[in-house]
Amino acid sequence: MLEDLTTAATPVSWPAAYPQGYAVVDVETTGLARDDRIISAAVYRLDARGEVEDHWYTMVNPERDPGPVWIHGLTSEMLEGAPFFHEVAEEFAARLADRVLVAHNAVFDWSMIAREYARVEREAPVRQRLCTIALSKELRLPLPNHKLESLAAHFGVVQQRAHHALDDARVLAEAFRPSLRAAARDGVRLPLLECRPLKEWSDSPAAPRIGRQSGGYPSGSWRPSRKRPACPYPNPGRYEEGKPLKQGMRVAFSGDTSVDRELLEDRAVEAGLHVATSLSRLTSLLVTNDPDSGTSKVVKARQFGTPVIDEAAFGQLLRDVEPATEG
Image (cartoon, rainbow, N blue to C red):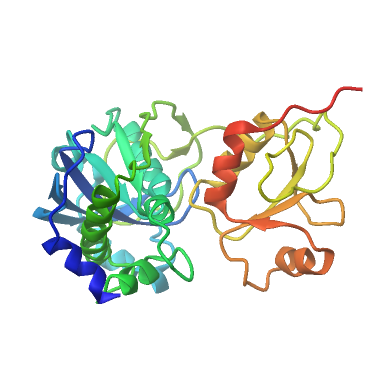
């Protein structure tokens, strides 16, 4: 919808409560787990009205196998001479300082960045983040899904190199500008979330490394895997749209999630839900970001009529889980 870009020419009464600057970020990584690493990062700095001030990009030697090269295109040979994270940490921090971090699936980018800083015993200077998926929902944009390419197409932004951090950050910055203006024009409250720096770090066996070594920074994970206790609440049945989750509900997950799967499952358990590893007629809810996929859980959910919601909606529901019925 190219006409949406004309909002730039429309006078906007800017809300005083809006942030004074943004750092639009994209990171490419070796994977999605806690011990995966950043292999490239890009930052577009924007002013209070979403206009680009400058941009920055770097590759990062992850000291391990680069992971899905077929997605990000960065091979071990390309990363071997790249700087280590501790060598770019200061410059990266300068790009983020005193700004709201903006990203598509922002919790993932923030989590990866926070972990990298924890590894080098520093804190990323980020106090708030804004997810463009959440913003598009607040604006009620008519998107077919929540992929970056769909958001870009809506605003007429052309992607040149998908999954290249610099181009993804550029695309997001160009799509964020009209989104921000639309929010300001309509008086929409920005979905800002607090960023809490991560400090916990425990050693674990190192993954296969590449290139020169950093001399002292451990490879590790956030905590040892553990068996979760049984859910103490009875299953109250299936989730009903428009109603809250209830303690004891059986929740299954399918496909990639922006939050580490184990962390997402931990949050569900802490809220009193039963995390199921498979899907059956007793499952209350399936959480997936790709409801059209052919995974066994999605197929079974269709067969059984199990309710399906995406990760963002599940995260909202986790904020207010109804207590289990006594007796």
